[in-house]
Image (cartoon, rainbow over all chains, first blue to last red; front, side):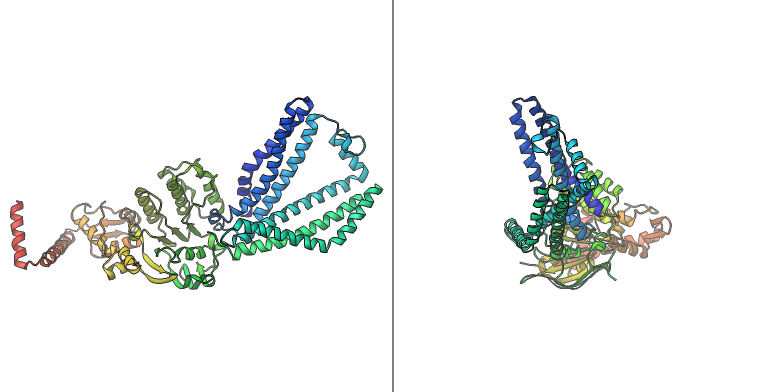
Length: 268
Length: 231
Length: 122
């Protein structure tokens, strides 16, 4: 049943995000060629790309909010909550969808940068170590320097952490909306307040364990300065820590949201 | 065992008691009218049966099970509101019901959609209120459920559609299922009812066979209702 | 088919009366096969259990009979039909007398009025 939920969720979000991300990629290609041609469309192309870039980010966030507040706690809730699926499945459905779309948006953004670079055929050597004129060179240099396994391992880890962080963020949003829904009036403001409250709590907790991060941070700085291959280990440690902390926060938000949806549901 | 059983079912919101210690047994193979004024607790009761609200006290079971995933798979609920996603088409909604409900009968749905002239590719956004209501009802009636909860099924439609809907409810009759109809339009619906339940301020004030009530009172169910709930 | 349900009387007994009338007045022919309970109920706009109860009673009265594999049929027995006609007739007469007596007429006055009316209507 979760599979079916995911199917319809993907369709509901995709009908908005896919055209938007497609437009972003198209705009990036156009921008690239405009730079190459050195023409006046340059400024217009930059503007269009910038707007679409912001739109893609904003829309991803807005949809995360809407797919929860409207589809689950609005009128559509009468459809969703009478489907024979568990509350847990409903929540996983939204969370997984949020993670995937955050990822896809990020990937689209990176691809759009690559497209700009490729289409404009410009020289970006100033922005990288040594003399690099293509992404391919950059990657093979990294492989040589750190070892292929390390780079790929780190990349996968970073990817996992990004996914955990976006999942945790989405769950924070869901928990805020769920708590806000419990009051009669001014639900939106209440949810925002709760979200801020959660964020403050998070930073308080992080500060309490922050000393450890401080040490690791200094460690990494030293390692990078030394130009040693151990720099990646530092990144690895930070990634794992962030991943664990955010996963714990995420789990707490999941539990809170689940409890409200399962025990305290009150659709209008 | 009755297909719907309530024992001391209660729902309180703070100091307000919406449903007050209800003890009710509803049998399968019956079409039951749940009748009462606004705010009498009808919708609260139906929501609890569907697992959309948790009781404050007491229990309700459907076919022996507490509301949950299992009961949702055998209950067909028609709420008194629009609840289908705007951007979906008729065809897509059908596939959704097919995917989630093993008892959804697509052929039946198609036949009804055709009788009521609702095209497959029409999107919900473009439908009139009446058409949306007909679509929602079709999706519910196309299921071969154990319990149907119809909340104001004929409220927003024209008289011809009302006849069609009542005929559909009758032709769908299944001796293994219970149909609970909650409505104000008692006169239009009463000839279809086996049993009537009057609910007032969260309490059951009457639960009788419809014909029995007519024989005893010499009135229609509508007439008795007006008497009992005189303002 | 025309069905006319009034307030205040159990529907199943109204169905029995109206079905009897239809059978006796020839809307159904003797030996005709009846539609299914569900179809009859849908046509009349009534609950199928109610219709079933009425049909069972009609069968007990001899107006219908069931052939287990093929369904329900209108009786072909002349005697049964005649009896029902007489009974229905009697019911109407009782109703007539009740109504006219409410207006203050005596039984003799009623008979006289009826005879006069019949003569005029020729």
